[in-house]
Length: 386
Image (cartoon, rainbow, N blue to C red; front, side):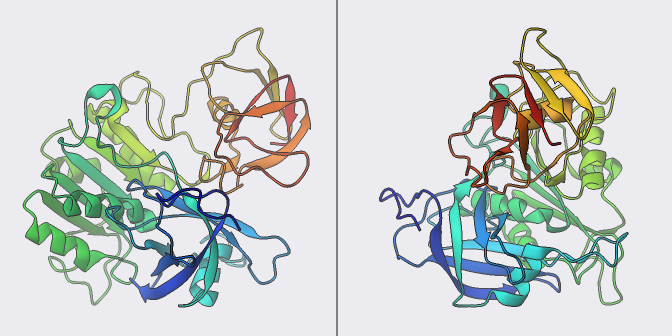
């Protein structure tokens, strides 16, 4: 365990937190309120950032590393709140095991449980000091688009805006299967009813027999661009996306086709890598946001990177920051999650060559020969097991 490094609440490594309370938000989503065991101040965070966890899950020889978004606003935090969905087996693989960490939280973590936690991190957060290229910021409209449990960073952003008394117009647009899975519905509606600058629209994919239109949800079906254009008065706001890949891909490309500047679309994406932008969608401007996926390119005299399992060999592109981004730019789709060197989802074997880390905050692997491709770049020609 590492002690906090200063009085502001930040710390290195893992710090012990206690679960103060556990509260259901829906049939599938539960919130966990965490306080520091040592009683010292908590690190501040930006709305949308996450915490890293080292979990001792029964049946697993090694600790399970995961990240979860902080689901509350960031003002004067005395605790951190996580809101975690119990993940079942994949729909197309009913015999596969359910989500390891989410089911561990739901079934084994109770009030009084202790957890090993890394400090808040992440590059996906609400911009308040001027958006990319100076064309956004803390006064312009913000559109929060989420699907399923992707609402957690959006609730954090919404709560932050409201608690700080900001008057910027906010559209909170959320899609979920039905009322059984809908978390924070009453809370979001309450904010919309009591704050003139907050607008909310909830879409249920398959409303249940007890779901009432106008009370629980506002439309049935998926969130389409036609629906979004009927809700949002213009395309000059900052757009934040978080949700399942089909949801994000449809809206990301729909926003581009509508004419939203690519530099004003920000997204959080977890899971296997997917290039969201379809060929020819929107303008050609470089997207400068949290999860940039550069276009392919190479320097002829740069190091050679070989993705062995994928059968792809390319020269390093100096315009690209990490090996993960090089993989994505060349059609290779390794798994990743946090993109911040915390969760180790992207960890793989370095078969040959040398790398260097570009992220000083990355939590480096203990296993010899393993690297984090989300936080490193090659020093020499390399071969990785991807």
